[in-house]
Image (cartoon, rainbow, N blue to C red; front, side):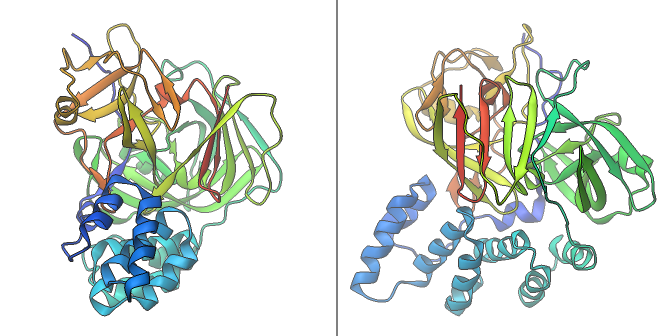
Length: 411
């Protein structure tokens, strides 16, 4: 039998947040809603434009256009659209979450808190977190490109690379050492034991989900140093299901403060100033558009065998290996495999299918499946079919332009 020594898949979902992402029951034209659920965003725009030619757009259509702006990173536009929505549309939980997270991305914490206070966010972590961020806003940027070499010496390195970094708590306690990269994470994550060592002041504690496990999570802030980059008041989520000695994790919300290059063949992470441009490369690069729901859930159009219409969560934190120590590249729900006509002989297996993003595909990759694989099977109503992990991305120099919402995969 295959074994997997650890499965992180580190998308930490507050229980209340998962419920907030449910699709609204408000009536919407069937084709428009179907296009949104399929992640066919050009079709959403086309159908919305056609509706506008026949009369005023419905509140449901206006809501979907707001959500579209949000996943494309057009945060100011999403916020402006919220102000123009009919009253009933403003009560949609997915709309409220999108506009609050848009304002958080913009660093406009007081405005986000006003919306949280106005609407029904009573059981949410947003209120205590926003109050903390208003007092101690995030400060993280690069004045010049920063090259961070991958660390060596750990058996986990081939499956989840790390760079050297330093965390400093408000209590003055320090962690210095490897910080593991995981695009399924937020800013930073640490174990409960690590939080205690750092003397973190905890807030917004609640029950959440990590991989397929229920776990207690709490929120705090630390200062972060990566080479010459010094970040102040960086959010850190404490995950009590992580092993006590597990090293800190660096996620998407740190990477989005830069133009990010994860050079797997070159074994380095390069953080460029966000306002700059990537330098020319002699490699052949292919572009793939991506989207981001809520605070950090990146997703992109994927392919699996003959299917070209899938949406994959971009999560490098999937660390699942088989008996030959090969890492699984994809995590999917068992029921989806069956719907695609694939019988899984065991927990981790080779489906004999090309797998990838956009027009890029790789053969011979392993898949791990589970009845509980898609704990959050939609991002704001967009159907998510699986999680594409490190075993796929590791073959590329991967550039992430958050402003353009564009990946480049170079080899």
